Image (tube, rainbow, N blue to C red):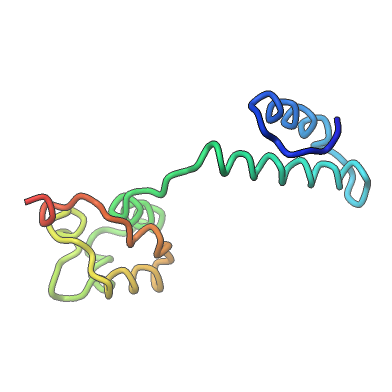
Length: 125
């Protein structure tokens, strides 16, 4: 197969088949180099044609909490004393910029997830 941009679904499927054949290529070989190039082409096509949407900010916070075995009580230190974590998780109030900064810095929740608009009871009323 000649190396060229992936423009169609058929091109994409052909690249995936070749990637599968080359998957066990030895490092530092022409086959491994070809696998690397084909993988980059496939990734570029997928990013354009199959974008993955960012998760809802509150669902992302819940995910990070679950991963750490935390309850809403554990989250309060990051959300300040004015608004309880239970109210944020119940969508009664929206995240503030300061909360977003703390959740990003302390929990590692990506800022691009936290800054997205989301439905809260405060904004829908």
